[in-house]
Image 1 (spheres, rainbow, N blue to C red):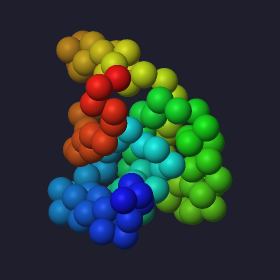
Image 2 (image 1 turned 135 degrees about the vertical axis):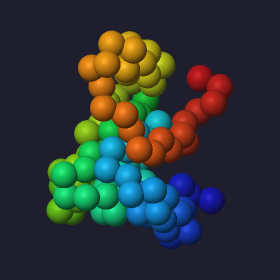
Image 3 (image 1 turned 180 degrees about the vertical axis):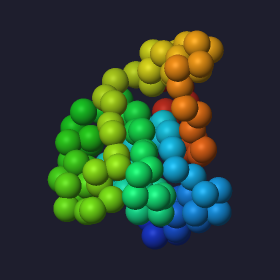
Image 4 (image 1 turned 90 degrees about the horizontal axis):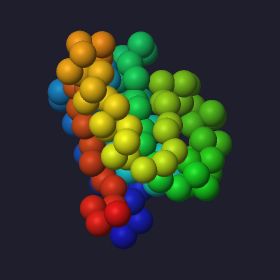
Length: 111
């Protein structure tokens, strides 16, 4: 099943709205449909930080994000997630970091 199914996007929207999330971390974004679904249901000043290994799918998804008002809430980082997560952990330990309200993990669990 393709990762951008309506059921999956509805689940993301539900998670964002039921948790009153304003800062979301998405690990494994693929084409960005999940990030966009999350961005649509967070406050106007909310943020979705998306980590994705494949630059092609990030660029593919960016076209759709640019067409949506919610797309401006999405920041994508391309590359392996581990170094970014380690950096976020260091920032959190140094109290230079605002916590995420919701974390969605949908990445390659082997790589």
